[in-house]
Length: 205
Ligand code: PRP
Ligand code: URA
Image (cartoon, rainbow, N blue to C red; front, side, top):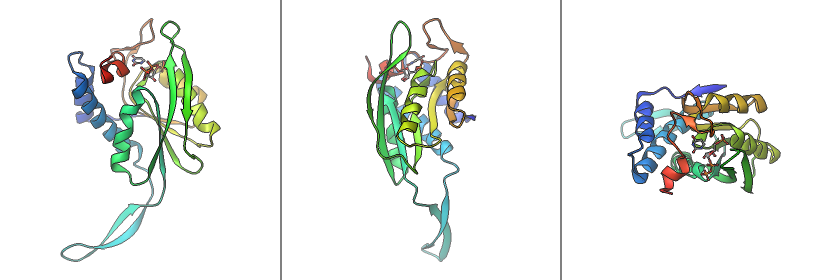
């Protein structure tokens, strides 16, 4: 399942992320804001239960989240930028990291690190801003499933059609939540129009 954010504020933020004159400090803020929107959208089916509270005026019956731990698994390095929004809004979040780096020539991702918390019975969100060939996300989801994470969700800022197809074919049970789906990959497997190298723009490298 592919779900595209389709929100005017999301479009506004993505356009400024694409702009090559956007400096790293602003880029980091925009990445935070867009991820917050994606996190809210990707968790709209979390379960809730009734709760009685007293407002200053009278009793009220509201709803609160049921106890359901969330795990965010960030793909290093750029995925780190998407962790904090989850930590800021959800009450019970733990974080894992999968280190993957694309080879500059082949664009094939090589795994160099994996540290995951317990995943069984938890809602798992794999976060990586760019879904290009889909190789990194597919490997990260492989690792999550090997550690017992069932039907994780993938949350990305920009996806290429090729990446969506790759992840969907390897992991048809994974729902993919994206800010936007771009046109295609170029010969070096960068997303067009994209925003360039997310990690470089984030960290000024
Ligand atoms: C980028 C990006 C994704 C990956 C996407 O990371 O953050 O992880 O490329 O490409 P794919 O879908 O073709 O695998 P990169 O390998 O450049 O590493 P970095 O985050 O350390 O810069
Ligand atoms: N990784 C990026 O950061 N950007 C792309 O366009 C493709 C992979």
